[in-house]
Amino acid sequence: MSPGLVRGYLYVLMGGLFLQGVGSLLFRTVSSLPAHSPLLVRGVFGIDFWHSWVHILWGAAGLALLIARPGAEVATRLALVFGVFYTTLGVLGVGLHHPFGLQLGNFENSFHLTAGPLTLLIGALAARSGSAAQPRPSSSSSSSSS
Image 1 (cartoon, helix red, strand yellow):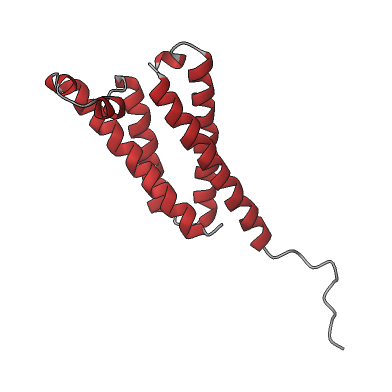
Image 2 (cartoon, one colour):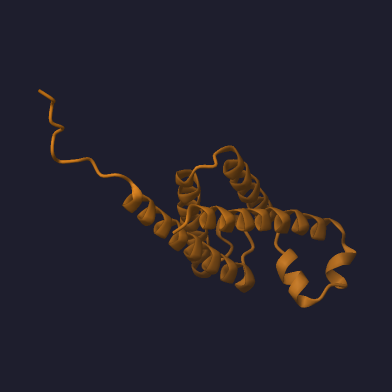
């Protein structure tokens, strides 16, 4: 998988998480917004306070990492860690009532169980193609000139 594609996907994902988290905090602080918003908007921005911060922190940390460390290996590791975290959060959200105090409903669990495994798959494919592109050490010793 192309390193540029992985990084592009992660930029969109992390930027989206950050914006969604900030939007959710605004949605929570302006009390008139939920009452006058369509169902889809309430679903996207209606997450609880602490869950908003999870999205903000993941988004900000992910963007900062992608900007500070432009290498393919960092993007691959970010994809793998994010994928494991969000897949786990999705499974816990389905299996437990409000894991870690987060109010996770069907909408949130659907997102976590989509974004998590997809990002994990992208990270695994990037790791696989990255390791295939690495030069393998030669088994023959270099000959010395006489």
